[in-house]
Length: 226
Image (cartoon, helix red, strand yellow):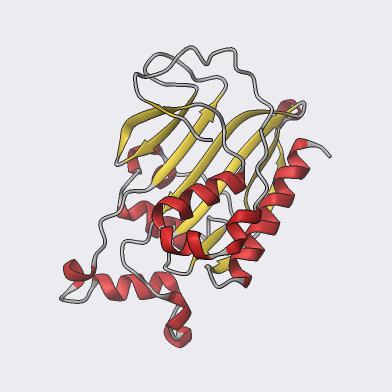
């Protein structure tokens, strides 16, 4: 099976399982786009470029709201957090990757909410307009893992993890397949669920084919994912 089909299959299967196990509220679907030069990009269905999607808005609440507004994600977890990913493939080799986990700024408890008067965005804005919004807010940083074959230097590792600040780039030892990313998120952010749910023990891990030619560029701190 080609790499793009393997990635598509894993994303579909895993997101459906998250919904079936009440760990995700919704799954928006995934698409595969044909770009110039024979590149295929796997991404969320409503892939819209714009200012709010740029790295300068990393960790900015407006980016989270914009993602909600445009349904620009794969799945929304049960607490309102968002997972999305994009993979660019050329000649059956990964050349770029962007993995994003955006934790909800409030615990929305979507499984227990009546959506008669609006969706997650409306509920979020209602909470933000309340007098006690600051008492209900949860301070959690998004996590983004980037890989770009064409953008690598001593200050910009080939594969790196952003957390807390857009200029924080912690070198990562390899690109992550979608299942590994989901497992990483639940293991570190929903540990009690991770230990209890059998789903995570059965998620298959795949090593993604990529060019390691520029891996010598790294920061002193290396995040090594198993």
